[in-house]
Image (cartoon, rainbow, N blue to C red; front, top):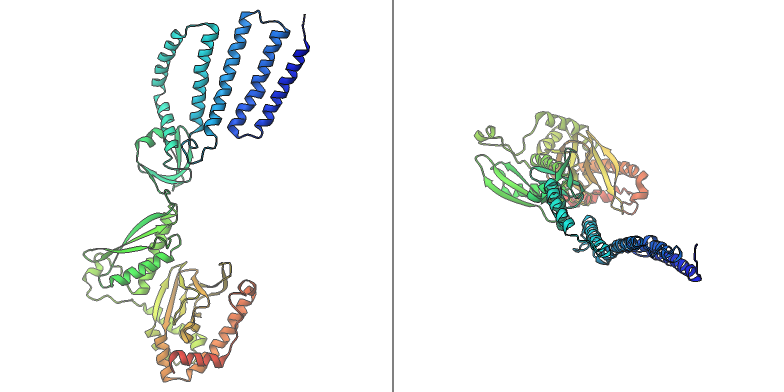
Length: 502
């Protein structure tokens, strides 16, 4: 027959309130402390309440087996909660980059597991008065057998734990292990998954990582130093070559300006002088694309500078190498286009031929700038092939395309005739071939025919009006950068005379 006292109701009510309090407190605690509080409120308190009811209400305390079972369960549950509390105390306020913060959850879980198992065996021995020596002997032998059977798995486990503590790399880093190069996709207790440039996924066991030298391209900085060696002709002055390579490096997307590119004269070969370009790129991932872009731009820049990249045999027997070889077809096309250009319509065929002969045919790769906004320059271009985007920069730093020029178009006449800084940038949308005309060629014409100034001014006025119309649709974005163009032919004429000293 049940024997219920008033105190039993108080005990049950207090247990329910204490359990609710533990759960409420867990909602306001950090993750690890909340686990210990929830285990106390949801497991320990209800279990103690059940034991209280069995002893006081059901009067089962006289049964030794029941009492020892209750004590064993309470001991195991207390060990479980203490393990959670110790874990919470260990990780409390631990900085992320500290030893405690880097401790893997897997390692803490293993420690908690052994704490509960070892403590549970001691509780069992104390409550049931048992000798654990045979069990420990069996456990030791079994551990040796299990360890031998799982030595590879355990090796991966401990190598993975050591690697997580050491942190030689992280997810997203580019690494090299042996002959494998790729970006780290996943790190776990058994292996590391790496995705190569060919988009193949390779799983590397942690044991292998522990034995190999690991090269991390993304640490301590994402910057990566890239070395490229190119040979140029003995006829090219080394300082000129270094200047050209520096300009190409600074103009290549992905190559940073700080640290500054280091261009070195490396050695003298049988038919070339080798130059090493040591540059830094912003990220190791696009290395091949950046290298290809740099090498491509070097070819075009060398042609513009008149610098030869010799062949092993063909150039070995030449005694004279033209500074900048001219293509007769390109020169013929340049003459025809120059005669058809509005700006030069007042010139005689002989004068056009002279300017073409004194000019220089240059080539640009897609993505190169022919010149940039704000730069000084006393030359213009007549395009023989390709397309060029004329861009201006908004106050937010965004480049806005206001016009697209192609074969037969002329660009840069204002800088040539007045010496003003460039009003816009010219970006090659495809490979470009253009005739460059410098100030010196125009100065010779104006010295012999000063009447050409009026013809040039008239043509430039019309071109300025056309440029203003092209800018109109972008006026809102460019208003604070480029004011509407005002054409004053008299002032323009005076500026040309002053610039050419006439």
